[in-house]
View 1 (cartoon, helix red, strand yellow):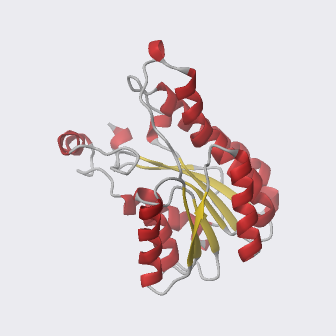
View 2 (view 1 turned 45 degrees about the horizontal axis):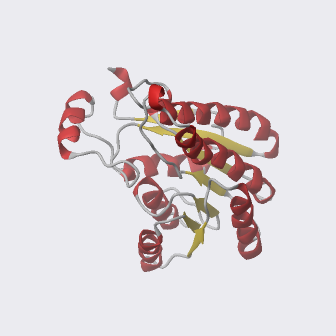
Length: 248
């Protein structure tokens, strides 16, 4: 079994969905987890209670990922309380549909401020902590949307494409410090950010070779694997987790 004993992890957007499942799984594997949230405090508390219920340590940490100063304060709190960081999961994200013809600057900025700038700032302000670990890992949760096209999805898709580029560039820059950086790109999965209706699930299930959309735990399992020593020679990669959807 994978073990993350004595590891300190921070998962952004951990109040539910992929982030919540990831925080719980990392805790089960032995990590002490910081559960980041912004607006969904009740859901974050629920994740915390599940982790505490299995006898593991975890902490709630509030931050608006779209503001660099709040990110800076978040990692200062981690430094003050734990002194180091081994695992950073950049999962927080936002999604807004917009046709290019009617695209408002505020919509573009709000999506990119979280999905791309926020990740960059989380990496920037976590580095001093990550460099204290002998084997540290950053995982950015992207999307197969980075490689695909969709009507009225230019903002979200472009932000995730930028996240893949950020991942690869950061991996090259940080490798000399022993910091691995990878991306996980889920296919369709119903989460707090974007709920897939039952009717849409039926249609997607017909298209996906493995016959169903992903559950959040499917993505969390891959994240945990990349966090483990079993993946210690993997960096700068995008791992697609889509049940084979991009094959068709």
